[in-house]
Amino acid sequence: MTQDSITFYRERDDYGFLSNFAPFPFELDNRAWSTSEHYFQAQKFAGLQHEETIRLAKSPKEAATMGRCFSPIRTDWEAEKDDIMRTALKAKFGQHPKLQRLLRQTGNALLVEHTKNDGYWGDGGDGSGKNMLGHLLMELRHDLKPI
Image 1 (cartoon, rainbow, N blue to C red):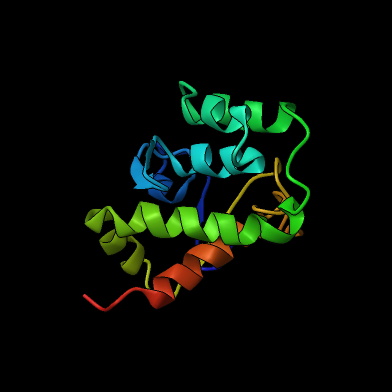
Image 2: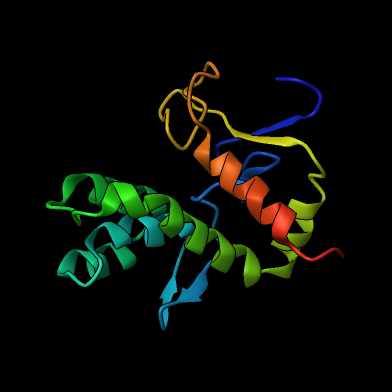
């Protein structure tokens, strides 16, 4: 990574607040969500029993596991997943002024979810992934009002 890049993955790391597993609860759709991971995974089953089961998962890891195991997922998932993540991030950062400040403080750095475990939301571990989470965070950072 270059000097102008910030990598993140684990919620306990320096930039862990960017992780969907970071413990920053928010309210969305008239319900409380423990993490953005809970919300994102639950939306695969919007309006179904699995949505509530995932919302109430004890950890973001458990929510992620459930989201990958339950089926069938909504038929429009692939078309909607980026907007659903965008919604989760706006709620998370919008309801936590400290997080907004920290995100702004990343300046113009490239934000990269660095993991071999995900080639869509992350960089695939070797830079070959799409890094969509990083791109959505940079989009949000751009849209935030100046301090």
